[in-house]
Image (tube, rainbow, N blue to C red; front, side, top):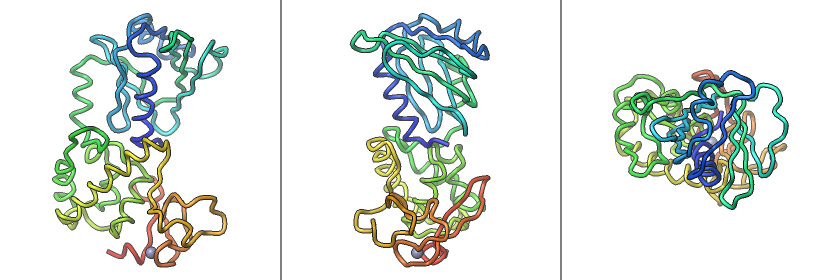
Length: 269
Ligand SMILES: [Zn+2]
């Protein structure tokens, strides 16, 4: 599932290509027919992301998209290809330089038109998004510190923290030597302050690079597993490979429905 940095980039790119001009909105598959008819031909104000959600403003109406596990956007310049298959929504616009642009959405968990109060209700349920300016990490800490749930599960809970997914969860815990099984209430204030201060620039780097790189330059290529092309992560998807710091085999286990990765030595407690 895409993490917050991917949604942030999508919002930025869609704003750059479509905002300020009318958008021709259709639902070739038909499942979003009514919503598409409501938005078609209207001027897009801007698209913004919050956590893993996208909100596209068309005057008083907002298009809400959540990609979920299987959703994806594709797009390009010029004339769009013939619509095929389960194409939930298509946007066609004039583009910033007058050349045509289009984007296709397939397989989202949510694609719906909401009123402002409905958008506010979604935002009210989400924890702070580290990519938003002035996001309050303390709000996440109050939830973490009050919970017996393992911190590895809390980091994935979008009501605690919005935008963090499986990769950032595993890597952030590794970078701070924290066991994913440590109960939230055993995460100290100062530790969380360091984790939050680390997470914000890590996610901003994800926006800049278009992918998640969490290894420090000095740790890259230190202990490389046999099949690794790059050294972007410490533990994510490195099951059975040597920890880059201590050489212990990286372990995996399912937590909150997703594979968790950790080093049992560096993250003992
Ligand atoms: Zn280790």
